[in-house]
Image (cartoon, rainbow, N blue to C red; front, top):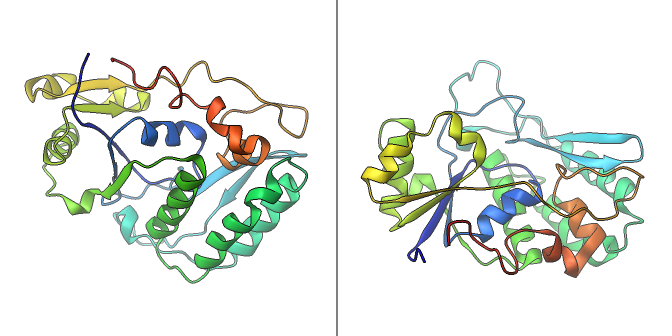
Length: 241
């Protein structure tokens, strides 16, 4: 059995899907990788919810004109009207879900707290904290800016894991396109790939099912049983063990 500290490193997302929180829950330290370049039309500032009219994007408007190389943690919100718009959409879509009433006040308070927050990273972090608490996830969450960053895509990840005292690194599958696996092997770090297949379905509200929506969907529909529909709770917690 492989023992030691497990680390994951991901850019912050706005109200992410359940797979993101599985990664957080599968490691000992989760590093928010937000001092890298902000990318438009990505998960940093938007996510999907299920509605009676189909999937709906909730997007936080950000300032990006003329800021082609700004980092995620430098990205600012363009206006704060998004708070009311997003909450109305969530309430409209999930008000009749079984556990909406149990969590609505908690989540609405996070939206209110973000009303005057200017920085996207801080907004994402506020939601991550609240959702982790709801799901019972106690993983330590840090920022890549807490560490000295190395040059090179893979070299930087290896350095972060080493500086965090990690012996294994859990990566999302999309990183297979660029990660140099041999650099982890040379550093004595076990590289493990997250597997997003095989998630169980549950009954959603509108006659169709979609895994890739905000974790709010799972929380509002399954409440205290949400863990049963995630991979990181129960027997098969960490690939490679």
